[in-house]
Image (cartoon, rainbow, N blue to C red; front, top):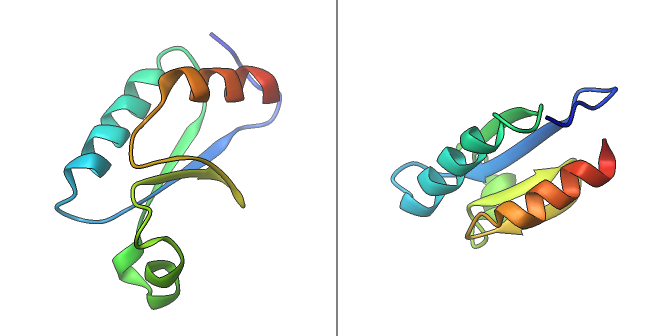
Length: 86
């Protein structure tokens, strides 16, 4: 398990009734068994500015302003990213 000195917080920008969003969130929950990170889930439809910024890219996984992946979870990319920053 990779444990970072500082907590890593990842954000999934998603929306209700989005099967790709559900799949990405489930995949990230599974990755939490091997990597320690916090996961925030933000509904882009809850705020117009988020819908404008991320609406056509959901689901989108980000850390701060860094976009990691969108549409589909790429476990190898996430694992490599987390290993690099921890």
